[in-house]
Image (cartoon, rainbow, N blue to C red; front, side, top):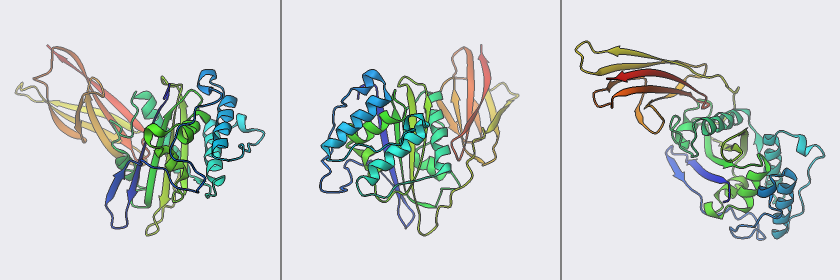
Amino acid sequence: MKRLLLVLLTIFVVSIGFLLIQHHYSIAAVNSETPDCMDIAASPDYLSTESAHDAIAAINNARQVEHLHPLHLPANFYQLDPAQQQFMLLNLERTDRGLRPLQWDANLTQMARAYSKQLLNLNFFSHTSPIGGTFSDRMNSNPVIANHYSQAAENLAGNPVAAIGPMYEYMYDDSVEACGHRHNILNPELTLVGISWLRGSIYGSISAQEFLTSAPWSPYLGGIPDASTPLVSISISTAQNGSGLLQCQALAQDTMGIARISWFLDALSHPLHTGASWTFDTRHLSPGKHTLLVYAVDGEQNYGVARYAIVVS
C-alpha cells in the first residue's frame, strides 16, 4: 500500500493452556452499519503531503462512509507525542462504535518501544524477530505477562506520518490484511494497549501497538517497565589439537533476566545457534575475516550485542 508496510498477528491462549496462533481475516461485526472489509482511498492524499492535518481530514472523510461524525480532538492534539495521538485516535474509533476504551499500559508500551527499536535498528519488518522469536515467544518471555493473559495481539506499521498515518491504514486501507489490524483495534475483548514509535527507516517512522486481555484465572497486574540494555560478552576457547573447533560462551546479564541468546555469523541473515554455549566448527569458513555476533534479549525485548573477530587463512 504505497509506502506503507502493515502486518498483524493475534495470539490467543485458551483456558486449558495451549497456544493457538491465528491470523485474522475478517473484521469484528461491531454493529449493522459497519461495512464489509474495504479500502477507502485517502482524501486528501496525506501520503503525498505527509501532513498530519491532511491525515486527520482523510480519516474524517473515511468515517463519513461509515456514517460516523468527524473526530472530536482536543485543541492540543497536534502538540501531543505521536504515541499519545495514536492512543487517542484508537479509543475514539472504539468509543464512537459503542466499544469501551482501552487502558494504557506502561509495560506493554515498553515492549512496543523495544520492538520498534529492533525493527528499526536491525532492518527487518515482521512479527518474528531474528533475535527475539515469534510474537508468542516474545509475549511469553516476559515474566510479568506470561501465564497472565487470555488474548494478545500486535499491530505494526511503517508510515511517514508517525501517529495518524498508521491509524488510517489500520482502519480504512487494510483489505490486503483482510482488515486484521482493524479487527485488533475494534476487538471488544481486548482491554489494554501499549504504543510506541521511532522516527526513521525507509517508511519515515516505525510504530507498534501491543494489545492484551488479562486472564481471569491468573490476572495480569502490570509491572514497572524495564528499559535497561542487557550486558553481553563473548568468551572463546580454542581446541588445542588445531581441529578448528571453538568453544563459544555468551556471558549475559540483565535486571529482568535474559530471555533469549542468539548467535550469527557476519549478519542476521546467517543464524548459527540459539543458547548461551555451543561449539563452532570453523573449518568450513571461507578465507578472510568473519565476525561472530551474539545478541542477548530480555523479557521486554531490550537487546545487547557483542562481537568476536575470526580470521581464516
